[in-house]
Length: 267
Image (cartoon, rainbow, N blue to C red; front, side, top):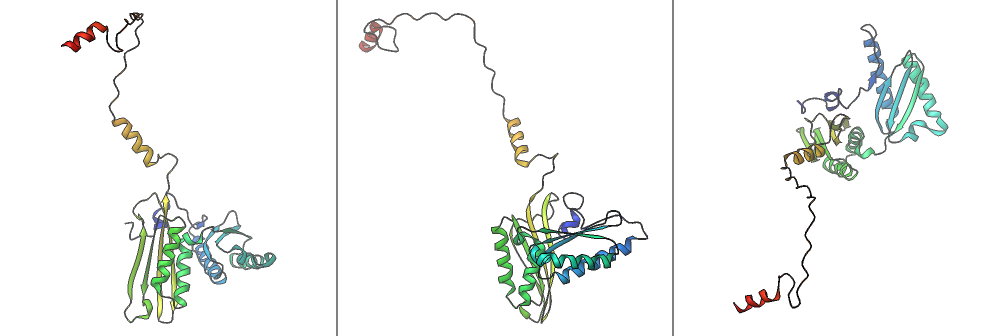
């Protein structure tokens, strides 16, 4: 199941959230969904050089709030905020409601799956060898803290006549583990010999809920429960101890008398 389905959709009820967050009835839902698709296509085309990771659209009470996650927020904002103001006007025309635009910076673009896929597709369009681009992206992601990464490419790789599918993986990518934080990205490289599809999975660690205990704590608790209990110590007695007799002259430490020690030597 985990190998055949979108990792983000597979984990929506647990540790992932929807990219479009609004509610509509049966009449308005198709219209609003089509508007969201057009907005994302418009932003992807206009902000192609701004390294946009994802776009979150929210619609509270006849308004729209659009959050753009980008590795280059300065390119989106523009000089003195001119570009973002013009972008806001364009989005208001498309949606027909007041729009508020937020820009969020992606701190580590080398670990973001969508940005990795877009970067590799741009390199393939510049005729860079696909193996070199994929292995370089894997090395950068593992160096910056990813616990595992998998990249798959399919199409006429290196311009050969027969299309094929190749993938590389490093580290752990547990797609069946629901609590695993898997980032997923898809991109298409339009090369001169045809389209090459790219998929990227990045494993960033396991998400532990508040009511769950870490696996290490559970293992330690089970180990302590399996150990046999130590025998109880006897309580100290209240009887007074007898005073020791003074040591006789000539006696060695640890013996009662020098005579007994001499008898032992004779024997």
